Image 1: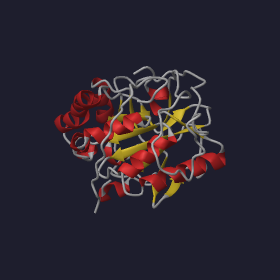
Image 2 (image 1 turned 180 degrees about the vertical axis):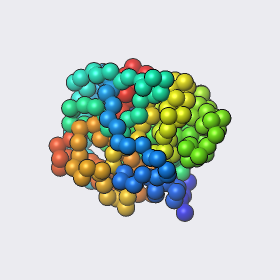
Image 3 (image 1 turned 60 degrees about the vertical axis):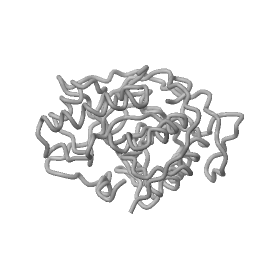
Length: 285
């Protein structure tokens, strides 16, 4: 049973190029098993790039960091430089692009964290101390339950994107339900966090042409899936070894800190850095 903890957050810097912006059912979101009928095949999409996050980092809070060699004098060793290429992210007709892996030759991977049920101040401190970018895909009720915590993630180099209202299987939902689940959180999050989300992640990875079409109509730049995930503090990739542009799925659970550290250990061992997903998929937004 998940514990819901809150933290008092004081400073929230503005988002920009130089300063960054689970439940048991989620356990089926594994990178190697397609959930539901007619699951989408892996797709690699071309993406644009922007200024990047390889710059100054926000001040860290107290606590120890067994993985990081960061000091207050400079950025984390795994912080990715700005993107080196600017390929186009193109819609498929009237459908938003479906992205499992970012199309880049940069040796960069991306950390994405879903849902938001466990809000652990110690994990937030760890993220702030690391000074590495990540993207939170939140459901609307969990975002509304603790805005101060999520503003704290923005202060810790996090970006906030959407993951529906009720974590429904969109493939089994009516078009009207799909539209509400996909579109409504964007306006809610803009009001809560000062930025309109540009990326959407469907629960269980269950996308469809209808989902992508509605996402495009609501103003999202891409529908985002993943190529690897953490379970029991172990990172499992679809293709075993890390590849440039891999998107890693994590959840807001009581193992979050250990899960993040496992990703960083793997990135360091295989010569990868950690980038901000929005720098490649939603530059300047």
